[in-house]
Image 1 (tube, rainbow, N blue to C red):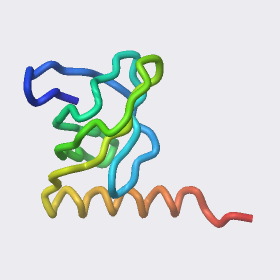
Image 2 (cartoon, rainbow, N blue to C red; image 1 turned 120 degrees about the vertical axis):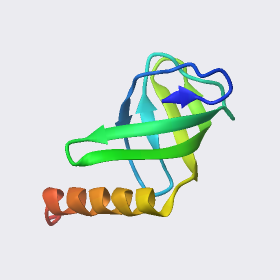
Image 3 (cartoon, rainbow, N blue to C red; image 1 turned 90 degrees about the horizontal axis):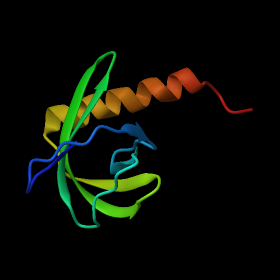
Image 4 (cartoon, rainbow, N blue to C red; image 1 turned 180 degrees about the horizontal axis):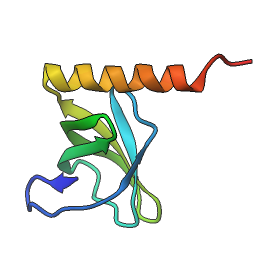
Length: 92
């Protein structure tokens, strides 16, 4: 993740990934409203988008809302989410 104004980079783990955003587990949280460029690397490729910090907890991380997503990146994210659903299997 790169903060757009300063260019500061932050490494973190992504969780709670969805079409509208994600949660980033990090010991360093950025202020609410901060604009970032996000790169998520997975075995099957790379997903990149712009996002905005919508909430944060300085001890655990922050919630991001995707703000600008290219159509090819949205398609990649949709594919990843579909793969995850298949891997989880049916709910009993």
